[in-house]
Image 1 (cartoon, one colour):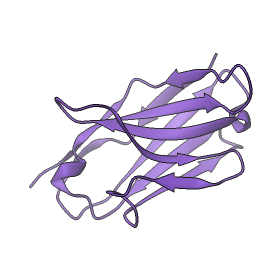
Image 2 (tube, rainbow, N blue to C red):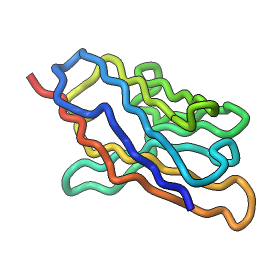
Image 3 (tube, one colour):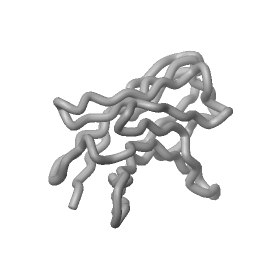
Image 4 (tube, rainbow, N blue to C red):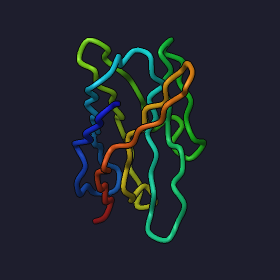
Length: 118
C-alpha cells in the first residue's frame, strides 16, 4: 500500500510558476513509476508527466518545455515544476504511483487545485 499526499497548488497569474510535491509513504518508492495527472471541470483525467525508476521522463505535448518532473528517492517525493503557466493549465492535479513489477499496483493522491487566472 502506498499513501500519496500532494502539496503546492494554488492561485497563480498567467506566466507564473508553481512547484507541486507529492510525498509517498508505505512502500519502496524507487519501485514505482511516478505520474502527474490533471483533471479540469467536465473533462477526463489526463496524464501530464511521468518519471520511471530509471529517471526516464515523458510529457504531454501541451506542457512540454514548460513543465519538469523530477524525483528524490531519498525523500520519497516527486515534484512537478510548472513554468509559464496558462489559464488552460487550471485543473486538479493528481499524483499517481504505478508499481513497475507485478502485480503493477496503482495508487492515487487526493489531488491539489491549480488555478491560473489574472
